[in-house]
Length: 252
Image (cartoon, rainbow, N blue to C red; front, side, top):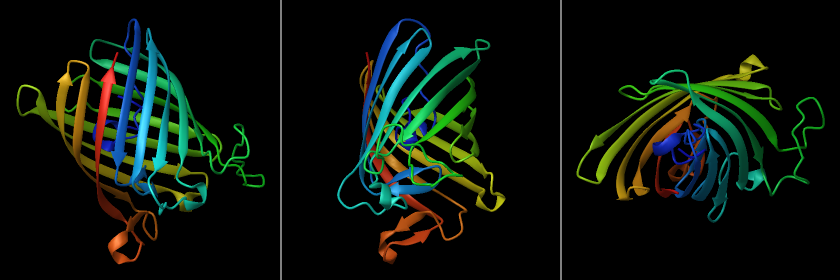
């Protein structure tokens, strides 16, 4: 799945490129909230993405474009985000596969240049960060996977595990459910936090290589003061919240 697609598809899980040959995977999503690792960064957003793969190697880009006013925690960043990633996917066995790569997170409205990196021990004015990741997944019931991420600029390490299952409903329709739990460890222990999410989506296969989906998500974190905005309470922060999304994806 594409990097940072709606939670129902692949919450924070890097793309697994085709093992052989050239592939192009595209997606366009619309989310009522942009939530990343239990933290809301923007309200309603478009999220286009593209990934190019060749013999296990892949490169891609994911974009978040807020619609209307940004009410996310990172309002100073404007909510716009462009993530560039590259990696390699392979297999240990017929059942167990691995994924390794790096992501460059950028915030176009906040950065003064493409190399505008955040410096935790410097002036703190940069916004972009670099993160490496490694994950292992198994082709067994519930499709378990576990990923480890390390952000070199914020000096945080994240461990996330996920499960998913697809229930056939009709010839071309399925109900896809999933869940993820993660823990973010910061170099400052008081900033560590736990997050999680559950998802449920109806997926319709338009063709063998294209599908549309729509569904709901529920998630949040145990960050003090909350990390999800509750509009009904005057934009107060809550520990968890509900949102929804729709998407169209295709592979060439």
